[in-house]
Image (tube, rainbow, N blue to C red):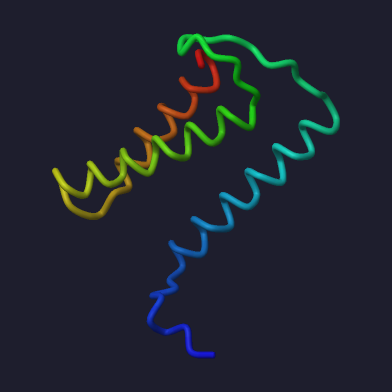
Length: 92
């Protein structure tokens, strides 16, 4: 199977490994210490898994907007994404 068209690079591998590790950590965290849903700034009940999904989805849009306005590299966008994810986990 030829996967050369996919452009697998080290940053791509790090990206997918990071998401997989985040999911594994969230699963272990949910098993060890189950959390009740809470109502945050969005006024909907969210679990830590929901907040992870919201932060990943928002981070994708932040990176796309960064590419549209500033181009690559997007290392600075990573800082914005981490701040966004921290705020989602704190207030959503």
